[in-house]
Image 1: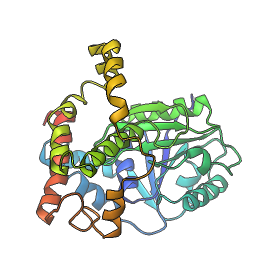
Image 2: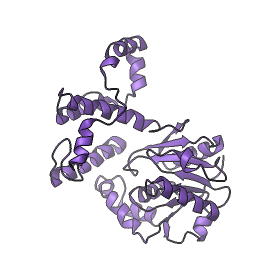
Image 3: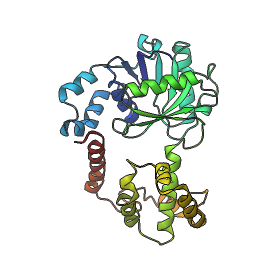
Length: 309
């Protein structure tokens, strides 16, 4: 397994800056961020870490110490780029942009540098299809907010070597993350497949007049949603018994939503411009104060679950 000392993050936007901050949890790593535009990534990280400081998870001094270990450059031809042992790309979710980025990196970085793409939906196999050395390429799906959510899905492409996957997994563990290996490059990887299966059923319940949106969300938050952080679905199936799970599925699965198309409700909301937090109205109406409260409450909840503060 390859030793990683120098990590390059390509893209200093919402995900890139938080990924860089996460990596500084391993003090042995040198972290460099590059972007096409001059970006004050430290200011962005400070804003995102405000609640961590407020809840005494880290101190101001600790934050500044970690920020001082992040180097930023707009020069893709600079030594930090050439010396990278591992690259995590976090540019815009556009196939052509990602392919162009890695084509450029292949000419700039060492031949043994490991390449990772941070994407929630795009195929690592497709992104890396035109690279000369595809065995060193893998997907790394950091979940937003990346500085709080522990999970990172390491996704093997159709060419990723076992050594590459193992090296990436070890790096993420060293930075305090909880990596999981997705052994096949499938749409949605592991967690998003399950998340959107739930969303499909939730939207269907509203679409069919079984319950309104607020009721659906409450039903999740105050029942099985409470135990999910401690009890995974397959652990639960074993707990109640696979025989009971079989019987329940034999009865209920024919009645669950199985459409392979987005709900007509989603299409209508999109077409009428009711885009949720972007416009103040989606399945529900939202004031600016309510939207901010949802975001702040989520971070507070995550901090409490993860750090007990």
